[in-house]
Length: 125
Image 1 (spheres, rainbow, N blue to C red):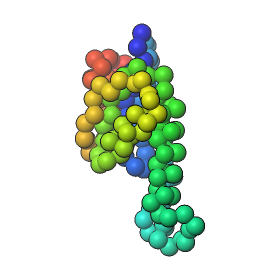
Image 2 (image 1 turned 90 degrees about the vertical axis):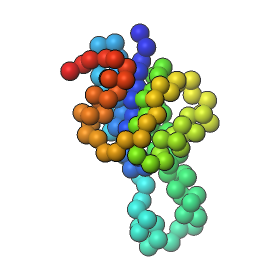
Image 3 (image 1 turned 120 degrees about the horizontal axis):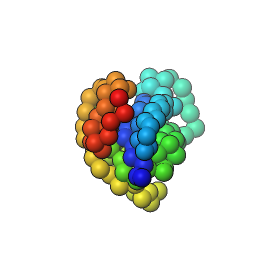
Image 4 (image 1 turned 90 degrees about the horizontal axis):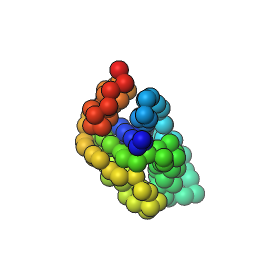
């Protein structure tokens, strides 16, 4: 049986949904991204864009570790994080097949799970 995954993500958090043969497993992954005001207030040795790249790569790595066993992926959310994550997956040479990548606004965790189940034609509720 295939392992299917779905992610709602932005640059601050990701809601991951893993669909197994008989269960649904959901978790939240938070990024450590600082707000712009905090970055401007505190001087650092590293340039701001370099700090951002390091943090975003750590965040994406946490997400990839969560979904690494998946065969297919649904990726949804607002903004550019989806596109950046796809590029990250390509750089990591991930074999996960992208089933859907779609812009959506804010969703509850339950709505994310329902969307992923609908795309993969699964029912756990």
